[in-house]
Length: 558
Image 1 (cartoon, rainbow, N blue to C red):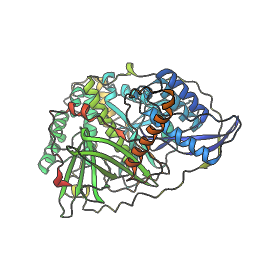
Image 2: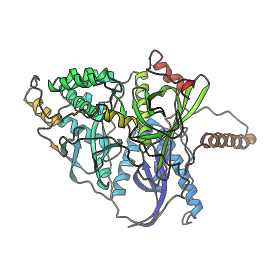
Image 3: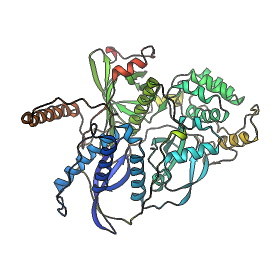
Image 4: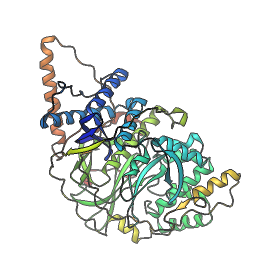
């Protein structure tokens, strides 16, 4: 997750005026909280979990002494580093303490009391189901309610996730981000402009997890609807013959056979992003990024007109980070091209933060496999209970961060890009909405009703048979700086030192830390910096030591 505090606001409520720190999560404004609220959260976190992995919390000032502009900015920066360090510790993020705080803070910032409302949950084919919910229900409540309504077994619910999607006026679909566990989807949608919606998709990367879903007819239909949608968008590298076979299986309503064939085609279980610009293998080269099982694939168009793919294995990324400047966002990762040869690869993209979230999801799945754990079930999740009195607020003023030089503009992506070429070479084969029922299913009456819900007979469809297309979109404007945060690592034991030498050791350690930080970020201009997301290469490489990848990157590609 990407936490930042890009600016402060002066707010007035029934208790008087105060300064609020505006917290953004994964590029979106989430809440505005007081220093005292964060101080209480810090005290409780340290009491329950200790403080070894956390940054220093900025100390309190003398009561009734108003902070100057420089002091307030210093406090904002320290609070930002503190919340980023907190978000790195998974046991804290998954705790009821953390989730209740940020769910309540979102509700308080939205000035919204808990009330009965309706919320539309969409499938990939545009069909939707309207759920009666509370305005403050968190995403896990919504996910479980939807899956149970369509009769998906509890053990399969968390194979799926809820995503925020923006459907542009021309029909282009943009996956913005995955909805967080401590987030209320209703509140998140409430103030968004344009056609934003909550969409259900699978949230795993290894296609072998499909086998678990193939045992259930409802799960098969969810996979099938998603597959039809992704094929229509041209996310798969299918030949004309393979597209013809897929169309024949679709006409026969052979869902399982359709999915089995699709698994043998390139880029299955990948999420394809909007067009971007990369500095690899050449500077400012247009491309397409896809993220899937254990890897990030960068597809570029060379000067000779040849389409070339570069496969970056996640287990060979030493770390990655996201930097935002003005309206530009950049994902960069330090890649192990060969033994003792690391090189930074930079990608400018409007979906840079979502790319980073996907990378973290891939790493989490690899670690889950290593540890032998399984997907959680509703009975395993943390239940958040909270009572909150909403105080009426009024924003009096906002203090923005000083403007910084922007990342250089990305050149326009020409229509000779990989995405445009796929549109011209048959990837636009018509895939109608999956609205028909499978005549060969042996489901009982209850299951038939659920199947009709998934495939469209009992659900509203806002855009039936509308042609979805992928084209370059301008970067989303953002006044904040969102950065990657790393997973938690055990704190190294401190060396014992005499009382007289502790101060010198501390100064020396801080000097070395500042030197490393400065060198690490010297190549990127940003309104602020953060520690990159680190990966333990030795641990993760062991997971895939027998894995064979389609293409490795050598010196010839540099």
